[in-house]
Amino acid sequence: MGARGGGQRHWRNTPEPPTDIQRHNYALTLEHLEAVFYTQGLKRFDENDFGRYFETNRPYRRQGIEELEGEGVRREFVLIREHEQIHVKTFRSVIWSLGGKPVPECTYNIKKTAFTSPGKFLSVARLLENTGVSANDGAVAHIRGRKTADCGRDDRHGRGMPPTLTS
Image (cartoon, rainbow, N blue to C red; front, side):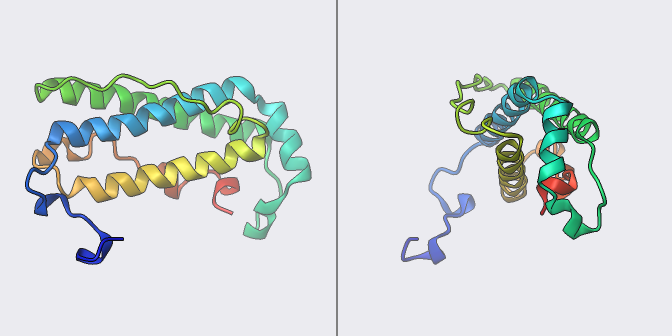
């Protein structure tokens, strides 16, 4: 934390605040990560993997849920993956329409860490979604072109994840 401003650096107070294109590219970077994470994770784990995990790990019961089926939970992740892929396409389109160049997808080293078990996958999913929601909430107030401000915002993921992710 810095000595001034409580450690927070506000874009509007910087000599050269990021442009809307830069802000959108930052969001696109996060959306790329989420889309790749769910695409690779769903290739790694099928409904049987989730089913076996929930048979032995039952933290969702503290939320009053009797049972979770692996197939149902995986189906929710398929929907989230599809949303993330739509977010990537939307941000790319908006950035091009603003006269910018969308950042490319990076290479992520997540296979050896995030995909060691369905439980690890669930934990990383929760972390990524909460990070994405927080980043969008923080940046959206600073975007000048209000009609593009909410183009990839979908806080249903972070706040409406399957119960196993919010325990």
